[in-house]
Length: 87
Image (cartoon, rainbow, N blue to C red; front, top):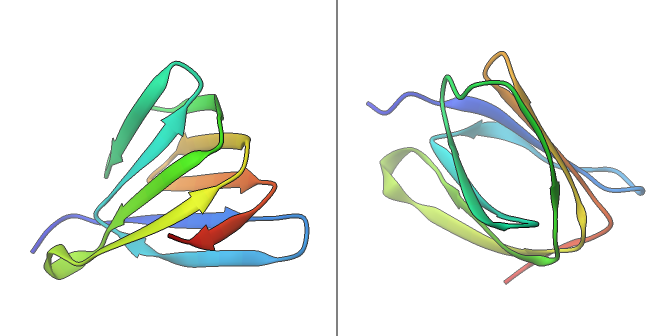
């Protein structure tokens, strides 16, 4: 069983995602960045692009996101973005 962490995606309208995930890969300003459980604290800007979420059982979901900010701390990742749509 893979170690998970809590991942939330918030837009100006509502909380779009709030679930336990194995990993995320997000479009950072300087390139894509990955986050796993127990990641070091981080705050970074994101550009518009593809967001990949890996769930337990190796299931993946993909989204297109707008510009935003990603905060990681204490096994919780919060992504604030202008928009998110299934890819």
